[in-house]
Image (cartoon, rainbow, N blue to C red; front, top):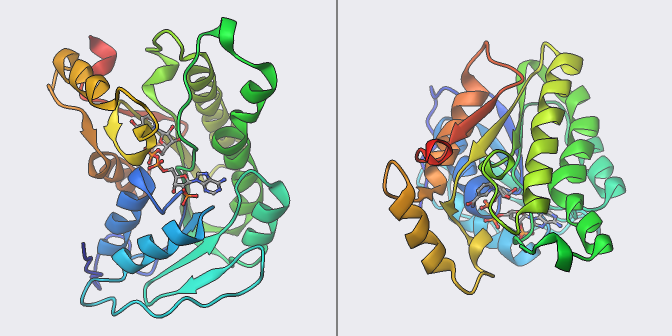
Length: 268
Ligand SMILES: NC(=O)c1ccc[n+]([C@@H]2O[C@H](COP(=O)([O-])OP(=O)(O)OC[C@H]3O[C@@H](n4cnc5c(N)ncnc54)[C@H](OP(=O)(O)O)[C@@H]3O)[C@@H](O)[C@H]2O)c1
């Protein structure tokens, strides 16, 4: 799995930071941004997955071979590569997010796709403390990333968050996921108003084949059942969502919007 960084791409001379870039949608967005000419920094909470992702990103001929991992500070370890870099940061911890951005320098586009595997349960069986914690990475992590990242964004830059169609088309057991997505869309609009002229948008995916679903026993059944109902008769690929993030980074006039990429799921 290689990648080619081009000199005159739509993101040439731009710095893109992707929180959640070691896997799934974030990883696909990192690949697309690198291919569009950007300097890319990915952040994840797991050193092994970060290293694997960086090695895959760096495998393209014009980016060069992956160098050995360089270990920096204990809390925020760095793996330097040509064209792409990675930091291990626990996005549940505000202090770690703050420290990461203090060392990041100015940049152009922030993408936030981090989230742990889904756990679905009806409200009667939902533990309140676990429910509160489920907001930590997806919502409060994004909130803190915007708080500490926005002041470093260059003119013309953007913030790109992640929601999901659970906000508008939840199923039984989706109370937490739906609440987080709804909160994220409100947060996106509020930040578009408050941080303008930085453009702030979110992508709202339908079901996409990524490691997010690995913990689900009936994952293949979920994919098949979803495919049967969708207008486009297939579930999404991470690259489909990466294309939406690339569009949001490069378009100059939309802000405060949730871009739905769902194979038609909202209409059926
Ligand atoms: N896939 C779908 O069908 C779908 C649909 C709608 C919305 N979404 C949303 O899209 C976002 C991305 O999903 P995905 O499918 O790309 O999931 P994924 O493949 O599981 O990727 C999740 C990313 O979050 C990172 N992460 C998890 N815990 C972290 C922590 N404590 N600190 C730092 N990073 C952490 C993971 O890195 P490490 O594991 O390396 O720490 C990984 O890079 C999620 O918010 C998800 O809810 C997904």
